[in-house]
Image 1 (cartoon, one colour):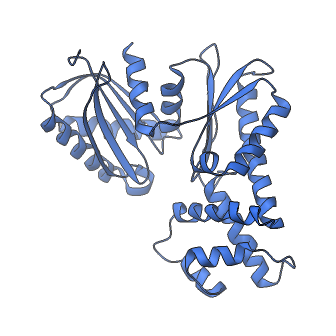
Image 2 (image 1 turned 45 degrees about the vertical axis):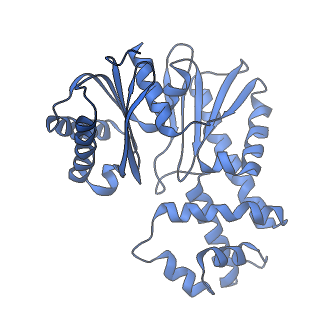
Amino acid sequence: MNKNRLVMAVDGGATKTTLVIYSKDQEKLFEKTSTGSNYHAIGTEKVEKVITDLLLDAYQAIPHENIEIVAFAMAGIDTDYDLSTVKAIIEKAFNNVPFHIHTIIVENDVLSTLKGITAGKPGALILSGTGSIAYAINSEGTIVRTGGFGHRAADEGSGYWIGQQIIRAVVKCEDGRSKEHTILKDLLYEKLQVNHLGEMLTWLYRSEYTNAQVAGISSILIDAVNRGDTIAKEIALNAALELTNLAETTLQKINITNEPFTLYLNGGILQNHSIIRRLFIENMRRSYPNLSFELCKEQPIQYIVNRALYEMK
């Protein structure tokens, strides 16, 4: 096996950061996971430390210092300013470690995942997890992005958005502004282990609050839909419509009309919420009957490894 040609892949998310080193023959030589590395959440200095520590551990663990391709797939790269900021962080981190690097790639994590899936061929990745975002590549190599601007500006159809809709529906019901009973109240209180609206609001506004926790509330939606809850059905329908808008807009940007094209689906909502996924696919096929759909099955880091190996070729 050719162990002299190595790639490094880094999947830097909001909650964890994974670094792996593979040979060109796809033999894994090193893997370690640390805490999150989204600089918007923890600041540039802490991100530099997370990356530096992982690099040092990798350098000490393997008898190779020459890395041909390094692919950083980082959450929080949404603007040119973000990209330059993260590149500067990574450059500082590598100054602390005696690796010799031929090529460093720094990209938004979803874009890097799409390139790892398609190896540069046409396709689109629609992601709905805590947030929602889409990237697509056409046959000319044009790359477009839609969404992914965070919960304050967008993220419609995401786990956070669904959790927020559930909370609002329950608050309206408890406050008397909605006359329609919803089982979402009982399911929400059971999930949060609270007994009434006051306790739920205390949970919502506590200092330990995170968007991921609100996104986690979305898990109760399927149960409510299966029990025939009207409000839950409406939330599921609207989530699918929002994701349909996200995907259709993305395809329009690269002039996809009726030709065969593949949408890759990822994230907890599209992976695990079968009702929303089914509604989304039905919506898309009305406008694009020749689309095919594939669920992403690999761990996220594997797609980043594939991205680096694709660049090596």
